[in-house]
Image (cartoon, rainbow, N blue to C red; front, side, top):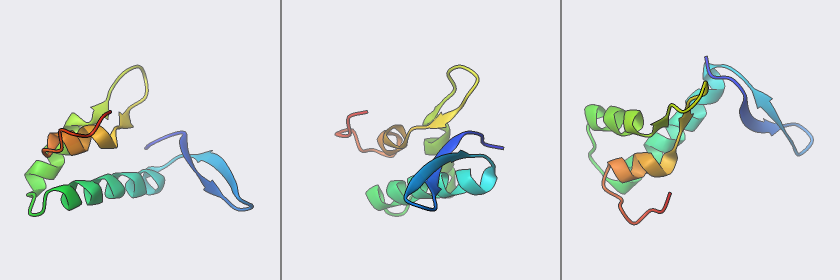
Amino acid sequence: PMTDILTTAPGDRHRFASGSSIAAAHVSGVVALMLDERDGLSGAEVSAGLASAVDRGGSQRMLAACQALRAVGTPQISC
């Protein structure tokens, strides 16, 4: 499961949380951005774009939205 994901908390605060439920919202948001950029992407293209956008540096993995958008043909985005 994903760990140490910054999220909102009651009282206009932020906290770190863990679990696939937290990560799913982030991944879904990136997929929505990808589909908005290029209508009609196949599931395989979305999957490949997400895979190319994962930063595997160190012990943590992070999804870079700008890299995912570049993977589906949005070169003007500066990451």
